[in-house]
Image (tube, rainbow, N blue to C red; front, side, top):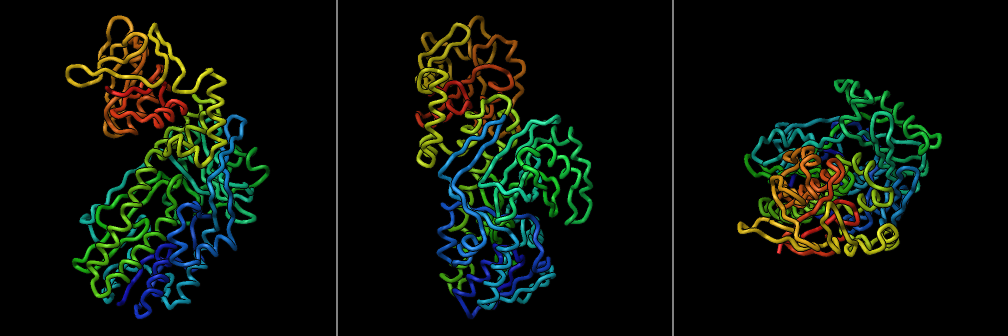
Length: 518
């Protein structure tokens, strides 16, 4: 079989090597529009827990990380002068250019033909039995195929920019600083003995106030935003400890999450998507490089497992590769939402609770405790020191209504909707103001674009804000809006009891109370 791979990034190169090993009779040609030693960005990071399938398929990544990478176990969160560490997060990173050169070497060694400085279209690849589109998030091949694949993009509100730095962090480090223009955050991690990756995120309002929107995006790729470099070096000078920021196509962007319903087509000819061409997930949760390499493993196995039946192989690839990608994207959505709102958390939460809130954004208290028992125990102690009781056993009182704990029963009305919350006395819930003590009942929307303005609640006399409906994410976001913007206690209403999730919600400060509709 003659296979053309459009895109010589990690996913395309890894697939070329794997399919040549699985089927030495196949003819594999990789076409890459850039030169062999061109690369944008600095490092790629991998979680220890996610690498098993890649390592089993080929040892090239394991060797790259062992010989050229950096490994760490702790995550550090820096906020308001405090540094809080959380263990149990085994991770490793390597310089992207180093990884690419090793993958190129591996692909050549097993007989793949690599052609650089060559951009291709589907018409250019007419003589191949299969085209693998591994040409990135802006895939030209995917766009040529038209809308039939069902590819959709959601653009985040937050802004981010990638730099490197000659300051060497000792592990994955999150730095949060409120400057004169707003709150900015760093994801920093070492990628070699001399360099770290330095990703900065902020909200659009802070970005504009700082004048960082002045860079001309029409400049050709490779040109970096030097104004932002100077601004951020000054803002994070304490954490850089005399180090410099390094540029490589460093310019601001908004993260684009891509989801694609169908990853292949056989008409008018067989084409299959791989990596960012099919899907993306926010870099705070999903490594695009790791996901692309896992796609490569799944595609090579499917092709080897269905010799002579390309349609069955491509369908098998989708069945194997799509579920783990959906899982990562589903986990990434709460994380991305966190980064879109972290300025509010920075101002409203103490450093210990901010760190717990951040690290529990996609994981429950029990799961986090298995990974980092000392970190979770310290968060529980801080709550106990402040309140004198465990989180769910802590009493609550507001405007004449009180409860002995934070996990409560919610009583339904005749229509099945929440009507009152049990406490020492029942508190009526209503979507409209009531005389006396009452809870403002809000139904969360199905997506974040529909989150309502809560400014009216502060003057309406509500005791608390009770939130139901919507999705887990929109319910949580609405509770946080009530607590952190409207200044009112929030009750998160769930349909099913889940003590672990309720504990996580209260300890993190996402809501003051959790109710279960009985």
